Image (cartoon, rainbow, N blue to C red; front, side):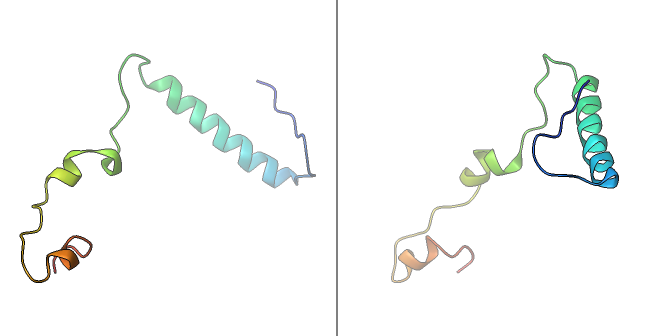
Length: 70
């Protein structure tokens, strides 16, 4: 693996830290099987949105659409 600094003048400590991050990510990617999907992010899970009840019609229904728990 070859790493080239294109811009800037990093200190040896900064370069070592960046290299450690790159090597750790490469090791983690090599450890997971390529055919298996990774862990699903809860933020993009559609059931997160569907799990909550829709607001019921009424006086403050517009406020409940934006403020959960109101």
